[in-house]
Image (cartoon, rainbow, N blue to C red; front, side, top):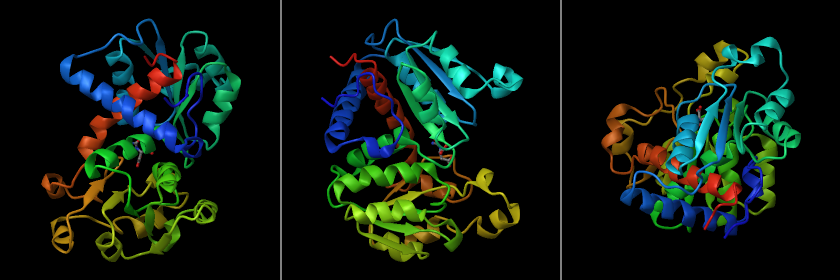
Length: 310
Ligand code: NCD
């Protein structure tokens, strides 16, 4: 089994293929167990603390669900306005405090590098649930789990990543995992929202085949998976620039008709207008199945970092 006991989960590049195999196996076991029972007892007595300095629906609730389905308890800082953060407490002091109550911390924060800073301040495992435009490794792991389930394997992947590749932390983490499986990648974005150069060049050094384009249809027709993303409005210093690029790519019924083959469509959600609701009934539209998979993968990660894998 992958050895994540006592470890922090901070960056997509920290995982080996072996770790990913183990996570998929453990998550899939939990998925099977939860078909038989509502909840398990593996993490009874353990406490998870969630510290979210940025909005979240899925990530926080699925971590809390995962912990409770494993029999553990959850404490939450609540909103930034209602906590001592509003009084000016530093991140380090807050996590040091929380580590006196909890066995594992999940943190989301607007500053890139903040999760590592938190992890360095405390002896308990810290899980990065999104650090600004940096990384979102647990989302990437649930994406990989979903791809494995939807396509039956992680071999011969050709993935079109579409949208805000500059600011999207989910794609920044996912490419690290995909690079382990020799996936071929199309980066589809407006010119101003291209994947950061340091990420692209790092991937190319590892031998990953990448094509950058603005043409979603051409890329999709060469792919077996589309990973759609939201234009990250909150990261734009200049909102007129956001207005210029918003709605650059939209998957709707008309687009689906132009696809040559059936394709899997993923999206970390929330969506704004980049996938029309009419697409939801398309068999390859897997984004709500992806949401559910987040619970099993986060159960696996919590059980692993807390050293309670049987
Ligand atoms: C993503 C995030 O927060 O980075 N959401 C998520 O965790 N599922 C994607 C986004 O906000 O666009």
